[in-house]
Length: 336
Ligand code: GDD
Image 1 (cartoon, helix red, strand yellow):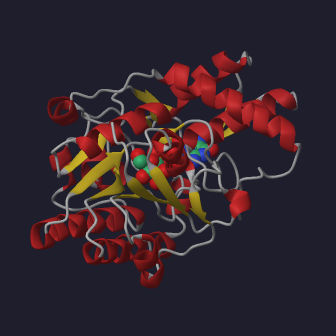
Image 2 (image 1 turned 90 degrees about the vertical axis):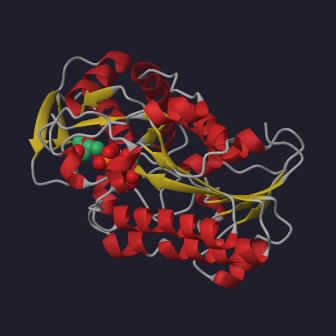
Image 3 (image 1 turned 135 degrees about the horizontal axis):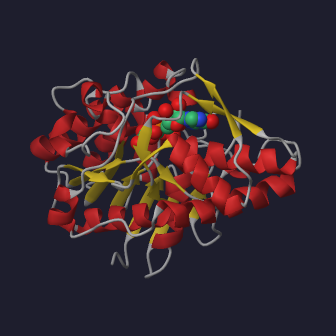
C-alpha cells in the first residue's frame, strides 16, 4: 500500500481520477490534485487535498510547477468520452498528447520516482474487433498498429512515449489499458457519457416519464466488457506497485452485448421490457471488444471481482439519485 508519499493526480476532477484521490487520501499520503475543469464540475473534491482547479496541463509551465517535490505521478487526464464524443472530436482527443508529453518532460526534470499513464482498449488494432464475439484482446494485439482513429492513436503514441522515457531516461513507468470503466461519479449526460451510464439514464427517464421506448445506438448486438470503478482502482494500484512496466489490460472479461446490458438495467430498475429503437447512424465503434486477462493474472495476480449486474446496480442507483435532484436540467457535473 502506498504511504507517506507526495502524489500528483492529474485529471483528479474526472471520473477515475476522483476515485483515485479518495482511495489514496489515507496512509499519510499528501495529494496534489489537478484538473482543467473549474471547481464546480469536479465529480469529487476533498478539502484535505491541495487542489488546482482550471489548470491546463497541456502547458509545460503548469506541469513543471506541480511536479516539483512530488514522488509519484498518476496521469488520468485526457479529453475523452464515450463513442459519441471520441468519434466526433478526433483533433481534440489527439491534443491530449501534450499533457502526457509535457508531464513526462517535467517528471524527468523533477526526478519523479514513478509515472502512471492511463491508456485505453482503444489502442488495440481495429481488425481484431470486427466480430460480435471475439476472444479477449491480448496485449500483443495492439500491433501492427491500427487503433481507434484519433483517440486511440493518441493513447498508443503516448504509451510509446512512456516507454522511451523509461528506456532513454530511466523513468519508472506503468501503463494500464482500461476497458470501459463505469460506476458512480462519472458522466451520464451531455454527450461524453459511455454506454453503461447512457443506458441507465435512458431507462430511468423512460420509467419516470412512463415511456415504452428507448433509443439505442447501433443494432444492440455489438459487445463490450465493462469494468466497475472499484476494481479499476484496485488493479491500477496493484500495477503501480508492481515491477511490470509494459502496457497491461485492466478490464473484465465478462463480455456482453448492449442488448444484454439493457436487460440487466431493466431488471435492476424493475422496468418492463422497453421497445428499442435502433439508431444505426449513431457512433458505434468496434463490433466486439473484451479483455484477455491472462497477462494481468500472471504478473499482478489480479482479477476483476464485481459482476456487471452488481456494478450496474450501484451505478443506476447513483444516476437515478442525481437525476431526481436535477429535474430536467443537465447534470451539475456536465460542462458542455
Ligand atoms: N455512449 C453510448 N450511448 N453508447 C451507446 C448508446 C448510447 O446511448 N447506445 C448504444 N451504445 C453503443 C455504442 O454505439 C457502442 O457500440 C457501445 O455502446 C459502447 O459505447 P461506449 O461505451 O460509448 O464506447 P466504447 O466501448 O466503444 O469505447 C469506450 O471505452 C473505451 C475503453 O474500452 C470509450 O469511452 C473510449 O473512450 C474508451 O477508451
